[in-house]
Image 1 (tube, rainbow, N blue to C red):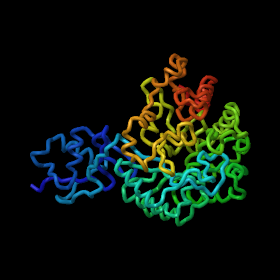
Image 2 (tube, rainbow, N blue to C red):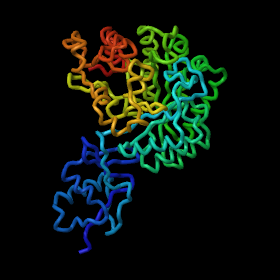
Image 3 (cartoon, helix red, strand yellow):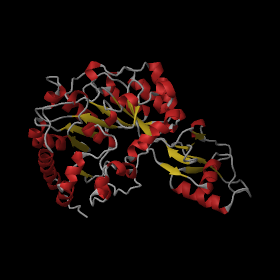
Image 4 (cartoon, helix red, strand yellow):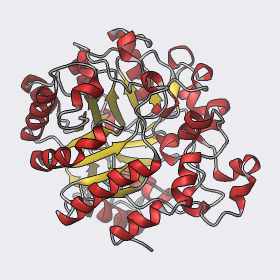
Length: 457
């Protein structure tokens, strides 16, 4: 008998964490499968050396192997056709961590009214290339699967493509690149493609005729539009982020027409958080005004058969007809045992100076100065350390003692008292409830938008 041998396909790796001992992970699309005892043995045996026809392999192992082959995780091979070193099992000395959003620079070429990082002032220092390589090594030891790159303006780093190449070598995918778009060139796009990534570009565009106003530099609007066209022509998905205020809201119809014509995949509208340059802004608009603008956009979006995914501030998330982005799923139904923010627990945020935050919303908050730095203590240690994890592990029932009126509120299941970062920016109280979210739910805006979209329960 020649035996039966198998190996993992090139995109699949064996990984583990202290709370999730064994998983098989796809380094290209971040798919991951947590494995129990039978699956663990089978996946480890997909090494090109273990004979599945031997007496050591049970029928269940071969059944599991057939399943892994069918799902594209493994393939049959000749004996000795072994897996690559990066595919071998590696366990991190920290709880499960999917990825991180990394501000690779605190610098920017614009002077945006709403920049929470106050980038033009260089409030947050940059790491050197060698320091960045040390950070990536920390990512690798923590078994990160994906990294999103932001700034400041990430393309101000002349070594950005080198950083991307190292992440590729370490089998960490680039999920998103957040940029103002002005420094994107054909060479940059070709370089990212050659590395093997097809990240989503989130490009900031604040509206036809008003973009320059929000970004603080005259004459840049057309350049951003051309960059959006360039990125789409290269085959990369594009998400547009638009800041909503008393000026930009007047041009939403024109902006909608433009983005529809540019064939973007997703559009996000939101009023900036009260932090950084936006703190004390005089151009904020009320909940009623935000709802009016967003409702108008919703009507057009529905009439046009949902041309892209849409995120209408705090009111509505909707998938486009092509189903591009899975993040716009219906809001969860909260229970007292629900995590306050599942995203923070798996995808934290790293400032350009190494400060680790639960999410970008904690930047320039009352909590920021109390946050740790991975340059000093290390990511794996901090992700395991109770003080920091106490923030990302907050559950809804932890908030009840400070918000007794929410315990019996009939709207709690949908509202959940809001997110911690938003509440902190609004009230300065980490464990409070969000006054804005409370108003939105109590005034019936959520149900109204769901009814308009034909999605009301």
